Image (cartoon, rainbow, N blue to C red; front, side, top):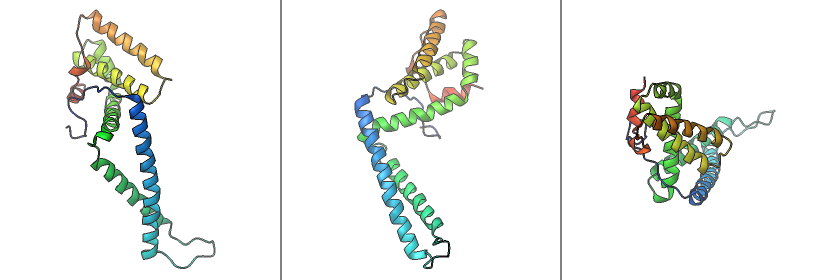
Length: 184
């Protein structure tokens, strides 16, 4: 793993969209429910221990910050639990998509440079673009993002045409996150 949490040799994984959607919806529901319950519990406990007993004339108890701390503590607990179970088979696809989205952000920050290098026939840039477009398409399809799919399909066709015109064989399997460090 790289220092930023992305696998160095991230491969595109086949995902059953129906299972992914069902699992992500359940995880989101449990996360939101847990966050709400834990926020209330932590807030109530903090108010019981540190809260003001008197109400000022405006009707405020002055416990806003204790409730806010309760929400922050609840978020920390929920994220910690999710992080602890990220390798659970139930969360495998969800964690994979999350990693892809993190990687997409890294690539997007260098996308202009990558595209410029690709026009200069830089093999690393072409490999990055091949992976980026293929994995972006997968995420768009999983997240039902059909609005930007036609533009992405055009970008894929343009890249494939460029690769073919140079008689290259480029695969998403060639991608390594370290290739991004070679784009300056």
